[in-house]
Image (cartoon, rainbow, N blue to C red; front, top):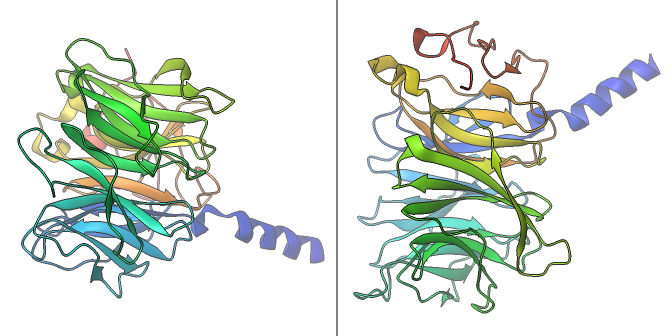
Length: 339
């Protein structure tokens, strides 16, 4: 009996039901913020506004969520408690502020803004204390957006345009030591996914002419000594779908993304974005949301396992997935295998 109780206790401690994913969705008429368990269960709406709330990210301790909102007439950075309570504006600026991301110790938030913009500087990266004070600009480029702090707090990744189109760069939080992570290619823009949890790799997307039909997901392995260089870039064999919001899971074993199957986009009921988990070790693909409106921007906190025994049954890519939504097919059609 004691052994059974110990096993049950250990399962509860390590169960991914403790893991949470925050995302935003159009399912209630405009973009609002939701949470769900890491297996897609217990989906819950947190924001209720007539204007858009989006780009949510967990604080490192999972107690708060930073996001952007247009409820004050322009994009501002907000923060709320994990249950949706205590929502408050951090930026309060006439410029467009958004796409927040916490430092690993939770003391600061990086964000992008067009404050101080001119004809040569449209968007740039700023850092502020977690209460909205002490705002500092750390980039002065043509264009910079989507900042993401490294797990050790020493660098911030972002998408930037200097003279080679949109590329992935890293910079120190003090604005020094900028270097390029992506490899420039003709007519190809780079979209940031993010750091691996150990900070040793970066996932990003190469898009030819920003056409999702010509996109390649790349995993860049950084130099093991911390030197500012990439030692290897490898394409990731993800489903050939329209994809966005690609980001590493908290446990480092999978990639979360929003996707839609091109094979069914001609059907009205198949032309929406859903959230998926792609396990890196064996290519298992699990659909986490199933709604006729778009679900986007997943960000996970404290995930322990890619799936649970509570109904999500992942299968290899190319097979029809069965989960708590009753053995459905996506868009009413079988899922095609990778060509």
